[in-house]
Length: 194
Image 1 (spheres, rainbow, N blue to C red):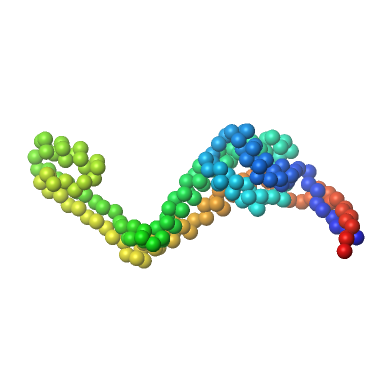
Image 2 (image 1 turned 135 degrees about the vertical axis):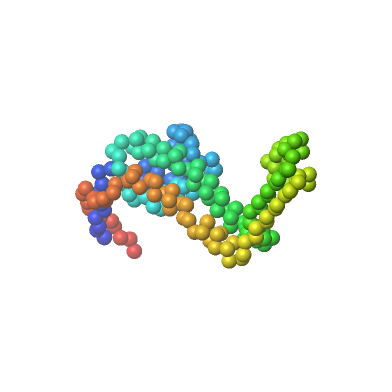
């Protein structure tokens, strides 16, 4: 027989409210504030919240208010998190075979000049919005920049180094008690079967 004490808090824990991903996604759909469009990503968010806050007591005595606050945070910051993850996925795709050359492509600058601002200049001005190198202007200067391998990888490193998920999860910190101290302990006695 083993005995141990388990902490008891004055408010419920995240896992008391959301025991599984199904109840989390059902509440998300019912409250309908939105924020994340990808259902798979919403499931991942549940597991990320569970990993970070699973045994943390919530800051609210009112569970409904906690849920509204939780889904408000998702509404406010979820779309940006989802977009940043998508962008990082595309950036990682640049490292796949056949796409690496895109890393070295820099910006292009096109400078056009027409000596006679008449009909030809008007055509030139309207077509520069599509950024072609124009053939019918008096003067054109085009500069194509190419990045060095070191610059390209350094820039990619900097873009991928940001942990967008930790930043997003930190937005939920205020929903949970800051100083977690049990209000009381519950004495538990278990039978050990061997």
